[in-house]
Image (cartoon, rainbow, N blue to C red; front, side, top):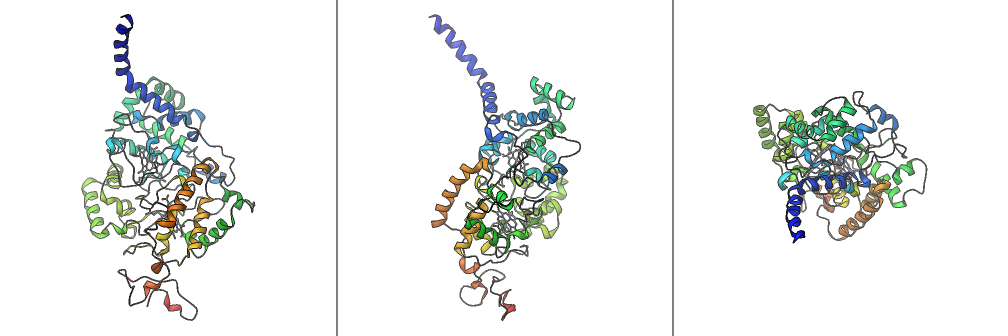
Amino acid sequence: MLRKRFLIPGLLLVAILWPLISVARAQLEESDKPFAAPKPLNQVGFPSELYSWLIPADNPQTPQKVALGKALFFDTRLSADNKESCGTCHDPDKGFTDQLPTSKGIHGQFGQRNAPTVLNAMFSVLQFWDGREPSLEDQARDPILNPIEMGMKSADEVVAKISAIPEYQKQFKEVFDEAPNYKDLTRAIAAYERTQVVFDSPFDHFMAGDQKAISASAKRGWSVFNGKGRCMSCHGWNPTQPLFTDNRFHNIGVSAHKSDFVPLARKALALIAKGGGGAQQLDQLAIQTDMSGVGRFLVTKDPHDIGGFRTMGLRNLLVTQPYFHDGSQVTLWDTVDHYNKGGVQNAFLDGGIVPLGLTEPEIDDLVAFLASLTSPVYKQAAQKEYQAQFKLSRTKRPQRDTAAAMGSKGHSGPGFSGPFGDIGPEQTLENPALLGGD
Ligand code: HEC
Ligand code: HEC
């Protein structure tokens, strides 16, 4: 009897408090993940000079600020329904991505873009696939207020919500000597993100002089990367800029298969003229409309940038799958097939994208090289993913077009295709005019 009397109110109490208990528990679990911990700076291949330039003078790193930023990064209370945090789409266990083609935000809504990793994001000159935000601090403002990501109505609403949490009152006071406010919130999150630096890959050890650090196949792949594959022209590497990106924007034909660029660009211009083109409008056009496909053009309104996206870094690709700004490619073999056939033709295609004539063993070598860019924290997950992708690539190659890759579609007659004809890599000293088709 007695038991029953307490059981019902007890259950009721748990039921009432459950949302709060489970939010607190989920937060704890997320931020306790070993992969979420700040990383050491003494890694082989770590660009220490570059790192010190990139810590903003007005937002120095301190352990207390990083701890606050980490708590905020994984706090679902920064979203309107208390279910999404930054960590939902940038999950440390998944290389700080969601491993989905495009991200799923509040109320199960999908956006147009693939979530890039936060790992090493501090080294990017501009943030987002289209570079619409200049810093991690500026970037962090957007997803919280985006209606299909975290769905908060305004910065004031966010500040009011976190101000009601005593630990945050205390931590903001300690770290910034201020009450909680939106600017400091983004500063703390950015400081935490700047602890997510990952190098120390087999390739870094190889470049530091250990010849045995990578396989013979990866070594051949490094050579294809720099030579026949032309990857180096955009994904550059040197010891002080070891991120494999030129930090520029190129149309490599990823959205060309589903975008009719010219009308789409006109529509985007009209909307921007009406809406003022502020940061929040650009964020919404990029995340939740088909204007997403015009890429960098949304930001610069320069026709040369139509369909242009940022050259992504290439580290830890085997935990950040799928690939490209729309998550359209499932395996690394698919991304290489895309380049090998000369991308997808369109009037704004970057001049660096031409058929490459890579053979199957060269493609396997190139992928082995990309796999050697995995940092030790993700070694196991990456090995598993490599096996899965390898297996898939033996039977399923939706992007493979050997005739286009080898240039044999560039000749008139059967097999000729594409609006501009395909240019082939068959140029020889005897016939230098062959490049460009006939
Ligand atoms: C609903 C999923 C989702 C949530 C929640 C989310 N992001 Fe993202 N994040 C994305 C997507 C998608 C992009 C790419 C958008 C684009 O480029 O237009 C992105 C881009 C980024 C980038 C840029 C990386 C690069 O290389 O350009 C950073 C940094 C980032 N997010 C950090 C955060 C932070 C901090 C939060 C929390 C305040 C957050 N994200 C919340 C999905 C999400
Ligand atoms: C003309 C410049 C250029 C060249 C050359 C180039 N890339 Fe890229 N790469 C890019 C851009 C830009 C993106 C992002 C494109 C997008 O998503 O629309 C990208 C994306 C990628 C991605 C996907 C990254 C991710 O996180 O989703 C991989 C993998 C990649 N490139 C590998 C290569 C390889 C391998 C080569 C050589 C065969 C190569 N790239 C040549 C510019 C280039």
